[in-house]
Image 1: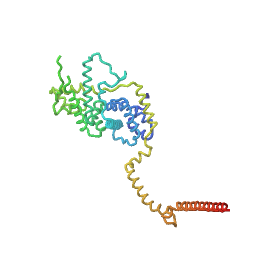
Image 2: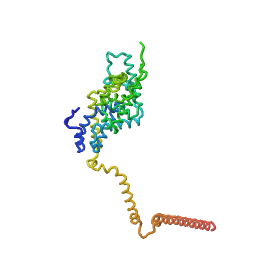
Image 3: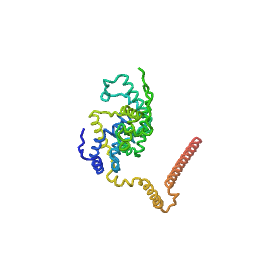
Image 4: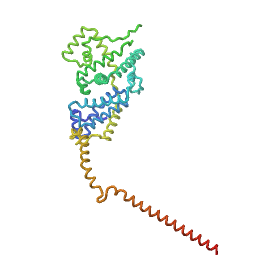
Length: 193
Length: 178
């Protein structure tokens, strides 16, 4: 795959080039952000194909609407907003996401399978599976705003201001969503041996 | 070995939200100092923070894919971009501020055009010098006249046949008498 041929240019410069009709600039934006875009879609769907389709659809929409991007936020938060909205729409249409795949029930290829560590015993593995199962179920049960805030912070490492930008809300609201999500997830582990 | 059931210990009410942010590194300045000071003295909050560090990382394991996966992803997306190229034209952005007004404005313009055009079209397309109600059935009436003509022709032919029959009968009767 190609490397970023213009590493010195900022995203904003590439967006401006793209708005002037230089399509090649958008290809570079894809190169820079496709991994993160895919990861976000995967965190929402836990399905490899759906994650690919949704993240690619987000890029296509971003490309088609690039002239509407006004630069008030960073390009990647704008892109993540498109992805999150697509994922939430998809979730609404499709219903429940298969969160149980968190504990490894989904068929995995050799590349995806996690190697068992020497230190882990069958009991520990079973416990880890149970923990993931509970957390996955609890995550599914969260309101979408809490789930979104949690996934963007815990899984994607976005800062509170960035999440506020993606969710188009205030930082205070994000903090509250995040706290409630973590409290609910922690509560779901009650009773585990 | 006796197993201990896990029951989450509550953190101090005033600190729980701060500790979540502290865990993620989103707590700065005086808020961070206050949290650290509190953690030194409060075992419940220390335990709460330790728990977050145990279960939250379990949920976030970024997937590593081989380079071939990303090559395919990038190639496929580039093909989609090239095929669809759904981007707006250069003027689309310049006039994008008009877009919300476009539909109502177009609708209003159509109504005005129709309102102005209807009286003119009614005058232009009406056939001159003929009453409107007689213009349309003209062809139908011509056809009907032709039909009458052919019907009377059939009738005349039938009459001719009858007369010929009568004459033939009369002739035959006369011949027999002779």
